[in-house]
Image 1: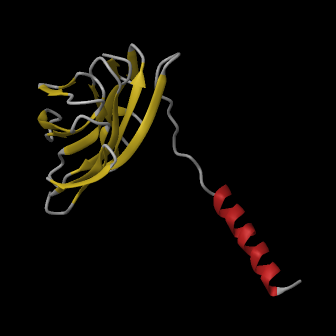
Image 2: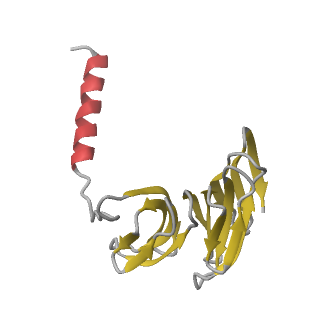
Image 3: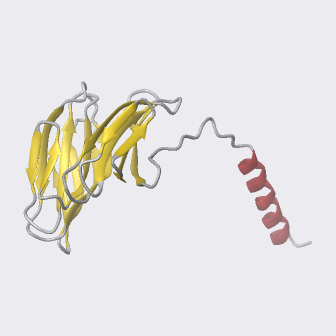
Length: 189
């Protein structure tokens, strides 16, 4: 046996041992019968919790004890999942059209940012109402540490626009990326 072949066999053996050693702590399903539910983004949240962002196309979305009512064709959602897989908080972001949450981030102070895009004529985010300027617009929303909406902004110029990524630096500065039509977008907020 050649050295190269021995190394390859050792690699596959170690790969199979490592893969077999991984056990799931839990797995949870979410959604509703006959619905189209997607998780688009995950992010670390306080302690061992996880931010979950996605969309659902149903009259309601059941996330354990958190139940959200649908508002349109597709609605965005944002949720917090604890290390046992249970949802401790969830909110719907939506209007009458197709609305998607595609990214999440946590700030150092514990506040939450979410971003995505919406084709609804208007997007209801808590006490905030964003108006669509075109085919679809991007959005960014900030939730305070008590999960109330601090602010929400739309990003668009009459084309197919979206926010596709968010990041927060250690000083709390928010960065967003996405596109306005076919032009790339990078923002510091």
